[in-house]
Structure formats: C-alpha cells, structure tokens
Length: 255
Image (cartoon, rainbow, N blue to C red; front, side, top):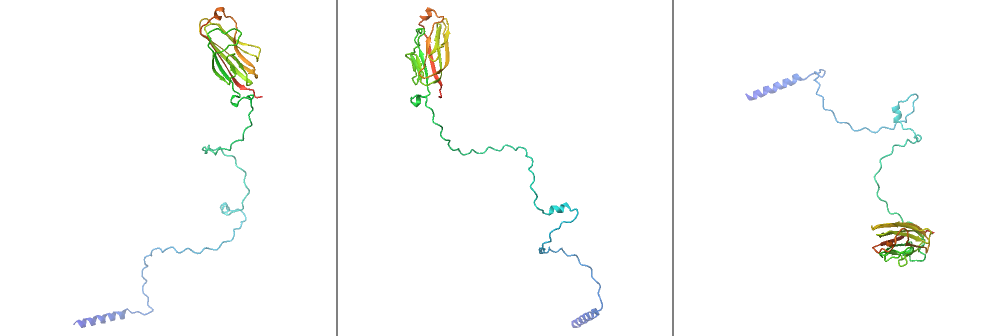
C-alpha cells in the first residue's frame, strides 16, 4: 500500500513540472520595486586639476570683490600718520651698573703758609675770664681758662688773637656781672672800635656783642674794657664776673 502511495506522489510532481514550462516567447508580470538601500560611503578625492590661465582685465566696470582677490603690484609708501596720545608711564627699570670712576681733580691750593696740612684753613678759639675784679679800662682782657684753641692762634696770657690764615673771621663775646659793664672788640685791621655797654643795677645781666672781620696775615684782634657811665663803686666791685671771648675762621682767602 505504501509503495503505491509513493508512486502516485512522484507521478503528480512530474505532471506539475510539465505543465509549468512555458514557451520562450511568453513574459511574466513585473514584480514590485524593492526598498531603497542605505547611502553608500564617500568616494576617494579626485586628482588635482591643472593650473588655470592668468586672469585678464575686462573692459568696463569690474566687481570690487574680484579686485580684492587679485594681487596687484606694491604701491608707494603712504604719509606718516598723526602722533597718537601719550601712553601710560612704564614700570621703573632695574638699576644700572656703577659708572667708571671720574678723572682726578686738580691739585688744591695751599693756604697754610708752610704749616702742617691738618692746620691749614682752620682756626678757632674760646677762652674765659673768671677773675672777679673789674677788667681795667682800655687794656686787653686776659683769660684764666682756655676752652678751645685750634691751632694755637690765640694767646690767653696777652689776650690777643693773631691771624695765621688770611680770610673772613667771626668774633663774639658774652659777659655776666652785677654791675655795669662796657666791652669792645678791637683790631689793628680797622681804626673804628666796636663797643657794647650794659648799665645794670645789682641784677645778673648778660652783655653780648659780635663782629665779622676781614683779616690779613699777622693782624691782631682783642677784647678790652672801656669807661662810659660806670661809677667808682662799680669799678671796685669784686662780686662774681665772667667774660667769654670766641672767634673762628668762616672761610679763607682763595688768592
């Protein structure tokens, strides 16, 4: 029974194949269009083209954008513009290197007249009279104490200053007494005598005076008492008295 059924199937299949064959001239029905595929990848870059021909100037108006793309010859240099506003001050720079030493100056002039260099163009003194007696009239005041005497231009025993360095000097004095006192600075550099008086009665009073003098070498300066309105009682007074006499060189002569 099974063998008969299999033979029947084969005969049916063969009959179907024979009936499906067509003549070469017959055409079937076109099918429906398929779904669009995905975009493909970019192709490789193409080869570089050949160099084109130089541009030619066209007659008539030319588009300005075209002229900007064309490189012409360099023109003449323009005029200098107006100076702009001053800028802000910059930071301070670093200190420079020390400069070279200068040339030696000219030799100085000696004004010490053969004295030691340490004594040149120097002169100062300060002396004090501590004697309680009234200083004699029209006589040089002498002194018991020497405070300063550099370099020994003043003689305390005689009360005289002797000029060693020609130049301009300043002399001053101060006195304290309970009676009237008159003192004056005297010099052989001029005839006029510079005097000062203090007429006092039993009160301590300071008498002061000073003068600036131009002195030549070996000229002298001293302090002396003189008569004005003092009484004989004041002349004989022995109460405490002090007289201070000072002098110093302001500047020496340059010639």
